[in-house]
Length: 254
Length: 255
Image 1: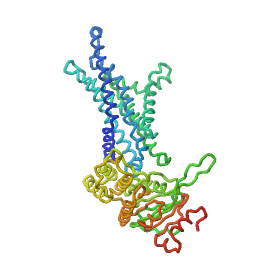
Image 2: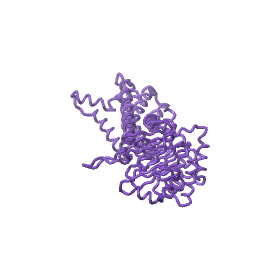
Image 3: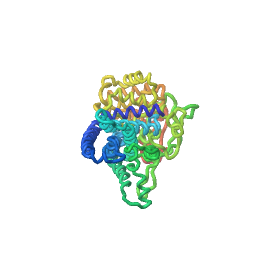
Image 4: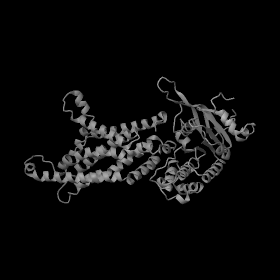
């Protein structure tokens, strides 16, 4: 299975690399991240007097984790579906799906390869975000533990939303419809964390929000429970995608 | 109906395959493929004839594993397509009605991908691709992107993709569609050559094509197999094949 996953991964990465959209999205993200970095650095410099008075004042890495990388996590969560939208929808639309269906490739390997390819492609925007922070290291001390934890949070967030994107891509023939569905799903889940109610049901629903499980990563204190949330999120949509694709053999929709 | 008796290890055996189409409101489901049974040995080149909508493409999709039957079983090279799908599909080459090609891939890259997916060992991929390119007459377009090819060449790349791993069973859905007369003749010669050591099913609605390259003829109508016999036996019946075909696909009850 690993061998075939590698074949799928290689093919899918090639498709993503040949797609202008991947590079345009990454470039747009780099521009946004650069702008946010500059504005947050200005805030950091302007608040130095107040920070000096605090007992446990955050370092620059902690400040940027919360004020730069956390907002960028939302952006990355919305970008991953854009990278994943063509994964299956294009196969259905371009009538290439029969190549995979008639090949000795298991659906687990196929979906695993495509998911791995999207996550690897997401390393580019994640790398840009982390590189922007690390770029400051020659000029000021940075807590690398916080930066590493933030990178792990971004990666887990990207994997989770990419798997949701793959699932939506397996539902429709139009990539843009797949992206729109996945973005709506991710945004909806994210907003569950902002219900503002103290009722038990609202608290329980808030636990489904990716945002609730990211804060610890950007503060430099990741919890294993939060990491488990993203692993389960990714695994759930991975399995739903496999089930959906298997159902296509019975439903004759593709 | 004259179905050949089963031998010890048929390359392809389909038993009582049935695939239903969902019925419209208030209607009962109709069978796209109705209780179809087939057995193919090495050297069999079966021409699957029928009118549009007879169920030929659905049959090939069922045999290739692209579609699951509502009833019945398929064995490819001794492997059950439901229980051992990967082993069964490894022995299978399938050319769909629309060749599954990526427009942005060069022909060699497309065939390399197909070879990898069909488990050709890494050390043999270059040679397998070269052999498929040679066999399908693709040398002059080997470096071109699939999206820039004519329909005829796309069809040939689809066929090369289906044979790149030297499958024991080959399913070709209207392989000569879009080809000019010369390409059609080349395709028929290639199918005859491929059929010498393999089991081949070729769907078509051209009787002449089936006569030119097949050893067996099967006629489908409304999802059911109405004839399955060797071409010689069909020819010896005193009735021309065209007349026989016309009678079998009429809506009267077959004799």
